Length: 579
Image (cartoon, rainbow, N blue to C red; front, top):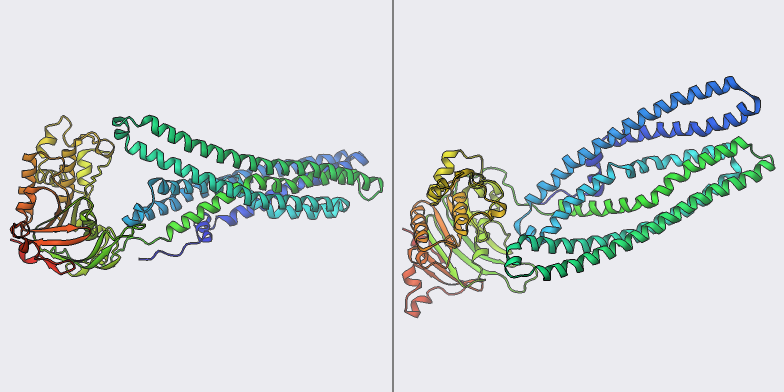
């Protein structure tokens, strides 16, 4: 299903909604109050001081006291609005990004390293920091600089041209600085992602790092990448500081130029001293947002890049969602001319495969490592989109089933099993909707792990640790099998279910799968001789193709002519080989 087309404007609308009108209104009144300060100074110099108008001074001070009180109240209100923007970005955009990443197909998620997806969450945080901070207030204050310029033209016209020159210089610096600093920021982010990717690999493989004594090697590699990040950060920092310092210098020069030109205008009786002082204050108000624009421009450029990445993310294809809940399948699986390859590989992993199995029966898939067994199971589960052909479940294309329904009706035990940090019960019960204790215990018993669980001091409340590191490989495998069974699926897809098991435990699993195959379609990728002998049918794969298929007695027959029963590319129908 294609996602809605996203634009930066739409993302900003989600962040601000109807809030921008409030911010604009608050900024208008705040800038009007700021305009009252130079007017107050002008009146004091030209009326109070010149004519000793103490009564006028009292009235002006009282009026300014009221204006300053309103200034405080409005600033507080504007700050609360920005807090709402930040909360909305976290709650709305953050949730949208998280849901989107979880909804992406497995092939898309596997196409980028973990650090890439983690960086997208940091993009949300970065956007929140800029769009709910001082930088966004600057954007709302910028239009009002022309209000200050207009007042300067009215009360001190001879110095107005100085501000126009300063404006042109600052715009040029901001534009050039934006391009240069943005490019430097992109290079810095790219280097940081490479460093984070290395860090993630080291931490995820910390056991191997320790066992193989690789700490020094990875430390050298990390230091090299960290040095690259630091060099890029220093370059970006030096460039940003150079443009910011240039802007500050122009601001100081602007004050000097206004004072000098204004002094000449006073001597020529074109303006008063009060007008000059007020013009300096207004000039500062006019220049300040433009000066702040230079250092803040990096934040705006970063947000632009972040929103572009988030827009690309939100435009990616998601897993298909069914419009209606299809009935529970019987367990008839079929591949029709299916080919599949990973991006960047010349040769497909699965090539022109046609296969039919079920309903019911224990079907084993064997072959050398790398022949495509695990990929075949993922295609049957709908985790990968086929490049060519169709995958069918009970005659319906697999894409017609929602991911939630497939997770309920097809139990899956991957080769690289991942347990989540929590308890044993949590990991068994997390498949599908909420399961009560009786269902958890029943699934554990069927998987043959119940006795071992209750024998431990904490029982089902035993923590498994990160990725199940506190359990043995066999225990993890049994818990994964229990998780696959708890929804009572019609189909079981098991990738090396007897790995890490001793001979007795392996025989127990073989007996369990033989029993389950009475009313479920069980497809097992395995090297286990015990499973291959007990299977109803066996498929032998080589380089993504089926080279032999049939009953175990036929597939493993010593007669070579019997082994060549199935030709490459032929239809392999194993539905008649079940019990």
